[in-house]
Image 1 (cartoon, one colour):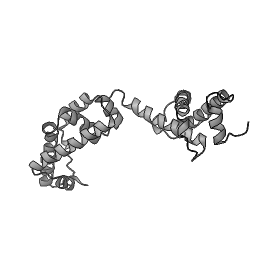
Image 2: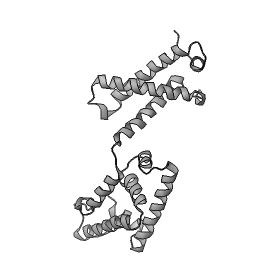
Image 3: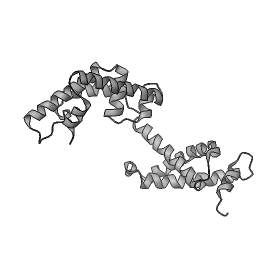
Image 4: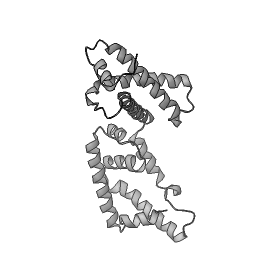
Length: 217
């Protein structure tokens, strides 16, 4: 069969089309092929996985991506090849799912406990080997105040979000799920936490500009 045009894909995949079953099978094969390439060639974190496992992952993700493409046919604008558009949807799905699996066992409570314990760890006080004794002392004092501000100025919920997002780089969606909230509410939570931290530190003579200058490389 000749290569389908964008119009052919949309027509053949439409509900009630006599070509729908064949088009779905062809699209699933395309997505599986594209995802196998992505998973085996572009995901260094999967380099040690056997090809059989990569193949199975590509099949599973392709099936899920196929459903997502079918649900979003009306959003295709024709700015690219249909198969390119569909493959991008599939890759975004894989990225999102792999990120979710990476943080499946992530716990905000465990994170807070870990950061409580790190305050006394000198490796966390950001003192460089080339610092003078005076500058090292200054850095330790500033860092201890920052650590204290996290506990004193923020609510437990604000601190959990700040620690996860800002200090640890946990994905926003994962943190939102842990806090049983949504993205917009989490943005507001972080905005308020930043403001309270700034005010708290400024009352101790630690302006943001001073902190950045002190710890810059």
